[in-house]
Image (cartoon, rainbow, N blue to C red; front, side, top):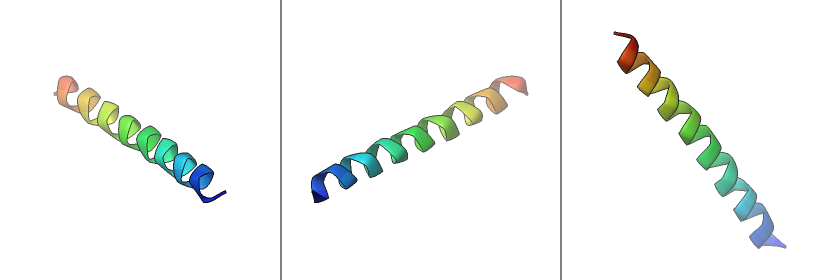
Length: 31
């Protein structure tokens, strides 16, 4: 149903957010 696609979108968003955040942390510590 609709709920399943919402859950998938949430998981995708969470994955991209964590990836972006870890890149920011790596850049911060490499300075």
